[in-house]
Length: 126
View 1 (cartoon, rainbow, N blue to C red):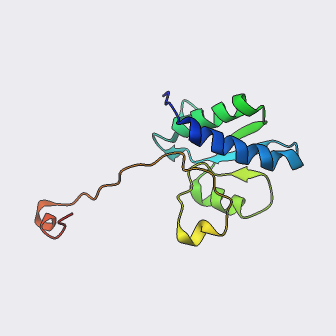
View 2 (spheres, rainbow, N blue to C red; view 1 turned 90 degrees about the vertical axis):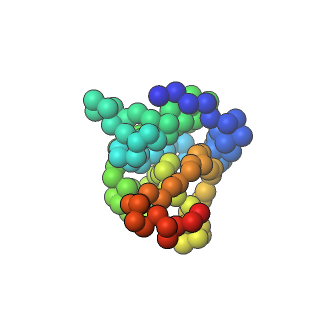
């Protein structure tokens, strides 16, 4: 899956990662959710998807050593709150999380729809 990523988004992420990597020249581990298709998923044991392509672009554009590790979301969130140089590329921005993390992005904006049965559809107007 090949996606064109807006240059402004890539530049913003590169800048944040570059500045955070200057202090410690250690690799950044991206904790990639393997169950978040089409953004990230496992195919024959290999990570694929839009976010995987984006992370690969960041590595090739900046020269920053990047590792991608498939980790379930709950475990990744726990690791992010601990010690280590971790990044979650699929963390949804919420008011509760705003103060907890350094944010770069968004890397994607998606439409979200509600689906229901016909009998409930009259209760949802827009």
